[in-house]
Image (cartoon, rainbow, N blue to C red; front, top):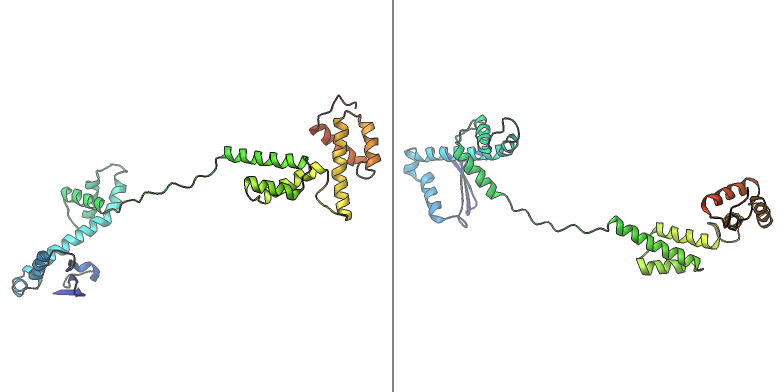
Length: 268
């Protein structure tokens, strides 16, 4: 009638004569190391004593225990759905929603039993650990101010004639190791201050690149000095005969008119 699984310390009683999955036939468990010995003695006498088995009391109590366990398991399975139903029409209370769902599964519980089970389920919930605050990240305002200070240092050192290596060392000391974007700004400002292009050395590509940068800077200086367009063209061609002629000069003069402020009104 009963199946018992034990390792000597923990005992599990199963009602073999009932239908369903074996795992759901367990109606009594106890642990000799943790549970009250008087309760354990009572359970052993109830289900293993010869007289209790012969008069049917053991079977009756096992059926009652099993039904209670199955009812409790059903209520536990239905509780999440009951919590969802209370937010939908006709908006029942949580105990009423739980009673309804358990009845749909073939078990009958009262509202008082539902209230008791909900309370026990809430008490069994593990406590939520206190989360540590997330690491603080710089605000956009602070980040922008930092970038502006860094750029100001780069520009001032470039204009003072410092080398790229010197600027990089100063930026690293003041703001930490520069990333690729900061390294780009260092090189850009140094080239602007020294009026050279992106390529360095004596190769033809370097010479062309540097001449382009030099002619652009020179034309901006002529515009800012208030020189007329015709006179500026003659001066630019004299100094940069290739890169300051025709469309090259027109493009650089137009850029100068947009971004440079003349000393006085420039004649057309």
